[in-house]
Amino acid sequence: MGGKDEVAKVIVAYYPELKPYLTSDRKWKEQFHKNMFDAIALGLTVLGKN
Image (cartoon, rainbow, N blue to C red; front, side, top):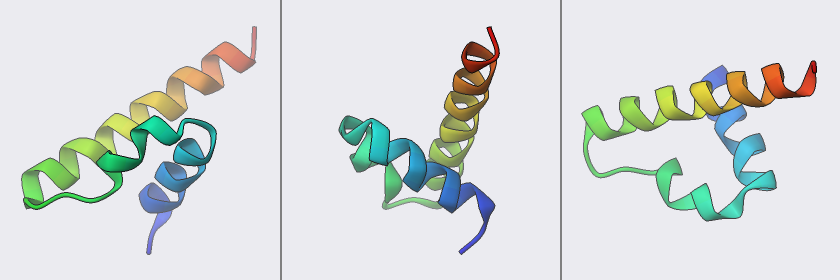
């Protein structure tokens, strides 16, 4: 398990409605969702610095 997976789990802990996106039936969806969680983490980081 790598960094992107850990980031996704932390985000899901705060926003449980995103849990369905932790797993996927296709490789491209899995990569898309990992990128989505990265974008959410970045947005939360930026919002936290204001």
